[in-house]
Image 1 (tube, helix red, strand yellow):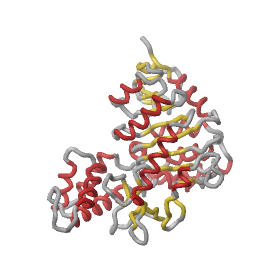
Image 2 (cartoon, one colour; image 1 turned 90 degrees about the vertical axis):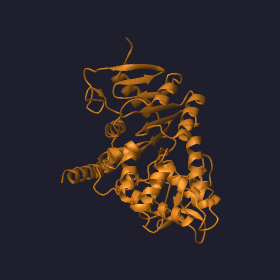
Image 3 (cartoon, one colour; image 1 turned 30 degrees about the horizontal axis):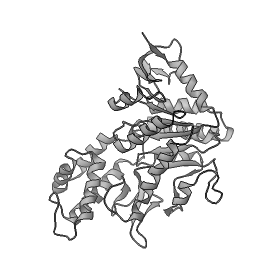
Image 4 (tube, helix red, strand yellow; image 1 turned 180 degrees about the vertical axis):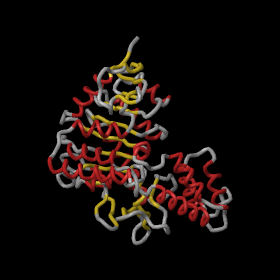
Length: 385
């Protein structure tokens, strides 16, 4: 019977990560934040519903019928954008009611994603790996999460990064800097700057109407009085307010189609058809690139179907893997580190284990290591307090 070897896969991945000419990217989903103690999508939706009272609760449950949290929020914004006056209704909601419900849902999301008291250890190790990396091209971190875990970890370690915005208190999005490629002398930023791209917005992005209609990044989470700019709604906003989402998704597309890209996917359940197609299309058309999906549990059906016919789309899960188009179980290793093999299964589907593996794969830097050790000790103490 065919089986896959844990140590062979891990050694191969380490070798590819050590190749400086590789264009290394990561794609992080809600499972990453869940590993640090934040709610996953289903728990977040439950917390939002529990926080809504009376008519707003009933109205939002109606919006959730056949939709997920992001789709329901998108529909609310579509309703508010389509209604011409304050008395017309769609789904029993007027424009003011839809806008008010939008604000309240966003307030509850922001509150639920407060990172105070979370376990920052996995994200600190991940940030340390990103800081140590020394590739010809910058590391690009793509995420669909709204929380501030990544920013907090990077800033705690003093890692310089660029997220598309320039400024501190009300930072403005700079399309030309996001779209720049190596060779664009005027707009290309140094490779040592980690790129952080938040595809679905953030709890500290806000819609700004005055003096210009645009999305801005605040120095802290948005206030309760305004909706956060999370999830790229398909409502017909002014083009300037859609710019971050459109530009960042295009950034993902171009990163995926760059020759010899290595994309590590963690914590993502493959529930977004649009993003899935971008990932699958790149794997199909760029055979010298490689996508590695780390699954926490079972392999999603559509992902498995694609991987068995796309050799450079690799999928690893606790009990099985799809490598080179071959789907087979893991052969239990005789001797493997705890992050590679745990609970009788392959361990890198857990973001905490993956972060440990990545941190171990890059050479240490004295000043960074000292700071990391201090932060890890403090984070561990806070969690155990």
